[in-house]
Structure formats: C-alpha cells, structure tokens
Image (cartoon, rainbow, N blue to C red; front, side, top):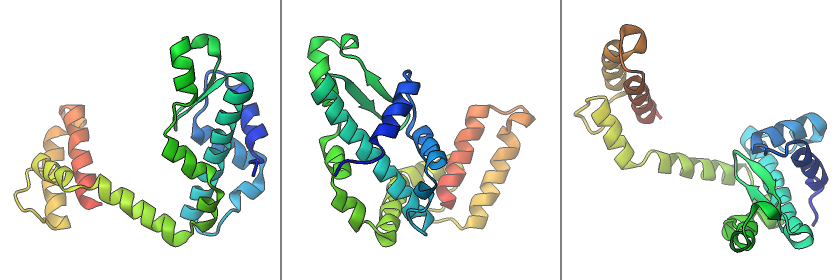
Length: 192
C-alpha cells in the first residue's frame, strides 16, 4: 500500500534541502493533519504509530527515488536528506542508496507490523529498551561514580550520595561541569 504521507514528506524535504529531522517532520504532520494526532488513545501507542507511518513513507520514498531518479535518500533520526547522485562517487552511490538497515526497512515497510502492534507490545518494546539502557555494567559504573559500596542501594542512600557529591562538584560551587553531568547521569541511571 502506498503511504499517503509520501507527497507531504517529499514537499518537506524540498523545502529543507539541507536536511530535516524526524521530529520536525512529525511536528509538521501534526500541524497539517489533525487526524495524525488521533491514531490511538494511549500516548505511547500514538507516538509509535506516528513514527511508523513516517518511517514507512521514508523507506517507500527512498526506494522510489533511487529507482526512478537515481537519488539517494539518507535516513537517520536527526537528518533526512536527499543526496543528488553528483554528490556521490560512483562506488558510493549504489551502496548509499541502499545504505539502510535492510531488517529495519523491511520492518517499516510491512504494514502488518503497524496493525499488530498494540499498547501491550509498545509497552514491551519500551521496557526492553529501558532494560538495555540499565544494563548491569552501567549500574556498576553509576555506583562507582556516586561512591556507593552497596550493590543494591535504597533510593535514600542514592540521594544522599548524590547530594554529597553535588555540593562538591556543582558548577556554581566551582566544580567541573563535566563531572557534575557525570554525577547527574549516574543518579538518573540508578533511580530509573
């Protein structure tokens, strides 16, 4: 099925030749199509569906631009951009036009993935993501940064160690901003 957002996204790309982020595409689509804000009652499922529709349109567009015009569409979350063939050397051109994670493209081009993904599946995907982010190695590193010896500290213990280090390393108190950010990241890691 041809994605009805392709023409609108192509117009956004035309107006943003230097590239555009997925977030800005999402923002523009929300403004232009009120129904794009009504894809689901659950906020996480809504965001998943909006993202899926955008990525589906981009991967369809990527294939057709290369096939019809020999133009490469570079797709990443931070920048989506049409790259004219003259900007690519011959060896790069073919590879870049198809330079996509084929599993990722296959996923977003499969409408069944859109239809079968519900609130429970989105919740599972988010939990899986957060678990990967909170791996044991990261936890151990965060404990070291906050100078906590207990392998499973309480929230109170985490907050106490955090506050003690913040007093010493806060930029307003003459501390190093990078150290302060590292301490804050460790704190967030352990509280999540």
